[in-house]
Amino acid sequence: MLDLHVHLLGHNDREANRETIAAFLDEATRRGLKEIGFADHDYYWDQMNFPMIREVAKDYPHLAVRIGLEAEYRPHEEGRIKNLIEQFPFDFIIGSVHEFDGWVFDIPEEEHMHWKKDIDQFYSRYFEVVTLAAKSGLFTTIGHFDLIKIFGARPSKDILALADEALTVVAEQGLVLEVNTNGRYKPVQEFYPERRLIEDIHRRGIEFTLGSDAHCAGNVGRDLSEASQLLHEVGVKSLVGFSRLDKVSYSLD
Image (cartoon, rainbow, N blue to C red; front, top):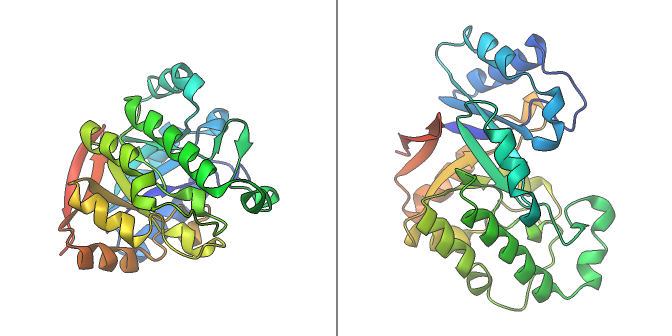
């Protein structure tokens, strides 16, 4: 079992010190994880302490401790992201879309707008931006693939059609998609991505990883057993971890 999407800094409400790092690694150990990946949001760059993570990880030889980054993808900021990821030998890079065209769509204050806007239109635009992220060559992983559903607004168009181009590019680029369990604790109350998308992703030969999107140590590994079971039911045989941007395979059996 692995959790390749945890946020040591949370929402920048704590320091990246020995105590906070150990709390995450202790919980990973308690849950029997083989691999854990720290991936704080890129806008907290100045608060990150990658060498400290490496140092504390030495006390957990049974655990593969990876260092990643969750980068906010905006089409005009590819250069900024490239500059960041060149500054450290990361194990993995998650590309995520939380906003487009100036609309930060996943914050509670914007929930009402999901019901005022044209749902088909903003779903289409969301997946257009995800497609650009996948084409950018910056990422190993695409995060919470259908995050746009966060508040439960559903398009009238088939989600498989809306996501088709993005998934085609993900497959062409050899990127990995995560099953992110945090959606279960949002208004939509289901994993990202939904089962129909997971089935289509598997059919396309795209590989999966797992992520809790934990913003506190207590949520490390949350619901990953259920996510693994879902993948197993769909026919997935293995999961992907990372080491210095190279894929590491783990059997799902």
